[in-house]
Image 1 (cartoon, rainbow, N blue to C red):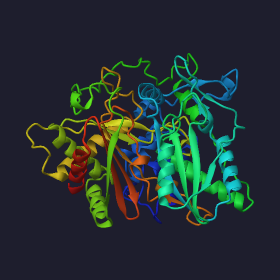
Image 2 (image 1 turned 135 degrees about the vertical axis):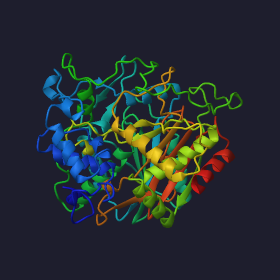
Image 3 (image 1 turned 90 degrees about the horizontal axis):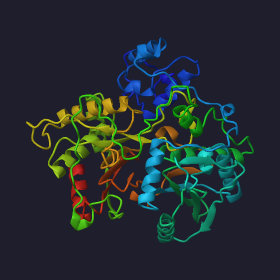
Image 4 (image 1 turned 90 degrees about the vertical axis):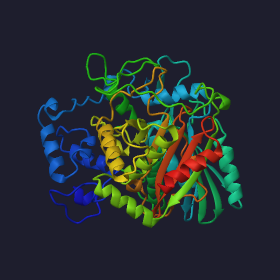
Length: 517
């Protein structure tokens, strides 16, 4: 199985999944294939503690016994359409993450969307492209979902699968026109009660050169979903151009099933919802000291209330070339971790310098697609992504930052591994209801496993003009946000800082310090 998914010809018992080129997205595919046998499985995050083939096999075998013996909770049964009198058409609950996006939207209207610019290379037939979009809107319920206004508690509602999402096509002259259209699109507001919550616009620069603007609300889609959408869109378009059956294999489940697996019918006893009202602090992890976040927002900048804080974010970017990226890979391999951890370590160290304290929580974005109750979850479009709190052990005896980067890297790696292993646990929150992961945020966007085939009618890549616009911070309460994505043989790093906490110059200084570290 590993040989089929990883870029290797053979695998030994003691080979490390991540050393062989595995990543968090391929982990999902491994477990989806294992699930085809119908055997009980541990959560996919078990691989972060059992990285070798032999260790993972032992963990999977252990899960075949009683779930408690494997140290994992029993999987919830996925409700079927027959569980609901109205079939698959009734409203259903929102997830805690969606509830957070709806709350953020209420506090700061219009701040909950993201905009991505993608380059499409090749001849484009507008009618076939529109047909491909129509088929995917029919396939994925979250592409036609709304959130009825005034519903308490909030719910979401899938609209009929006959809906058609019109794609806007326009021929433009020059990159300035693309920038202008992208800026105008980013200012367009989306109301969560009104469909659609995703918009597509194709700007044609030349017969074989186009830019696709994808503007969507966080409440229906995450970054993984954007990559999945582009992969399926190009695949369906290719099949249509060849006159073949357009759709991929049918989905075995959808986002609705994921939600209902955590909100089963009354009496099943399998709900994972905390039941806590908004604003209630979750119980801290056992043995963890209370966490008090540092204050970066000053009254002079109007930052006393996150809900009324300046919504403007400063942004800056830099690129790490192939030679630096090679060094980072070596550091990660030596520490038995993955590429994102050295970058997370540098980010954490500069946050320590900025705040004057080593005890900090950084929100680490995770795919959220470890739901064993939903088969084929890696093929489902929806807002699964969440954040886990990474809180490296701090020592008052060490200077800030730790001068031994290798030692700091190992501490951050251990904290990240522990956080990933607890993915899916109730979110830790401050007394004001905000998650502890909100203030400082980090995400590593490597969707290579979802990349479309390079020999299709349309080839997709990030547009050269797409900068920080694709990486909007997760909430108005975020002070610093760092996003990393592979680019050619190197890495592109975007840092955004709240205007209520940073001047543009201060953010540039912070980003340079992260780069130089």
